Amino acid sequence: MPVYRDEAVVLRTHKLGEADRILTLLTREHGKVRAVAKGVRRTGSKFGARLEPFMVADLQLYEGRSLDVVNQAESLGSYGAQITQDYAAYTAANAMVEAADKLTESEGSLQQYLLLVGALRSLARGEHGASLTLDSYLLRALALAGWAPSFGDCARCGRSGEHTAVVVQLGGVVCDDECAPPGTPRIERTTVALLGALLSGDWGYAEAAPERDRNQASGIVAAYTQWHLERGLRSLPHVSREASATHPAP
Image 1 (cartoon, rainbow, N blue to C red):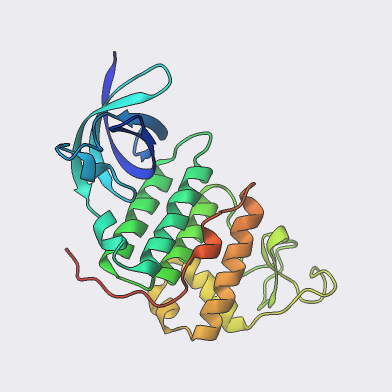
Image 2 (cartoon, one colour; image 1 turned 120 degrees about the vertical axis):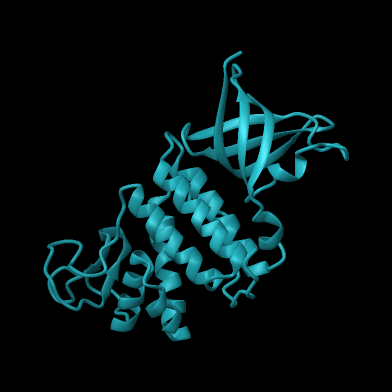
């Protein structure tokens, strides 16, 4: 059987038989891969702990007819243990890997892989609040998938200005007078600025934003995500929006 090597993030795992496990992986070069890790649930497994959700590993795999087979695994990022120690980080990470799974349904993307690895690393190290990290990840992942929201010019007509009407179905902010449908709710300009900061990675602005703006932005990000993903994210309603504890950098 052909053998290949690749880096991968473990998105999901399922038990198989008494000792095996089926893995859903997002790889750096081969897109999304489903593979079997044999014997990893046994106590004496050499690499069972390296193939848990949120872990990043260098893998050697055999190509199979329906499922590939993991032959070797070397840890590249042991993020799972740190993430699972904090509930807010854990729920955010679950939403991230579910989104990555859906956004790479048909084909993989190096950019999506790198974005997910960076977000999981940030969660594990406690670099930013878990909620802010999740919202920034979702906006960027959707943008990479071709659904970049507009938080500057009107998403419908392109008119510049400080718009305060957000319509997720139209792609972001729209003109308050001309393009906004009747009854469209308005949001604070500072919330629009926060959304733009999360999309661009302006962490200084994002972390200085008041709780009111963060909560409003999170609701908009959740609605935008659910609109564009066909079946939505089952894990998103369970995300803890409490501030994440800070972990020391490994």
